[in-house]
Length: 27
Image (cartoon, rainbow, N blue to C red; front, top):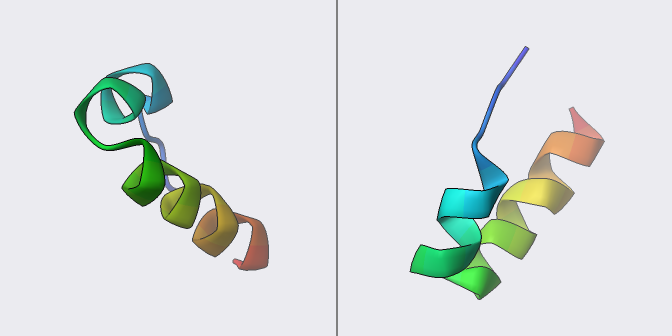
């Protein structure tokens, strides 16, 4: 199980955060 603080990632790099979301959905 991968836990990410998406709120922090969105402020840092929204595009990278979207990529992480897609990767997690496929896991």
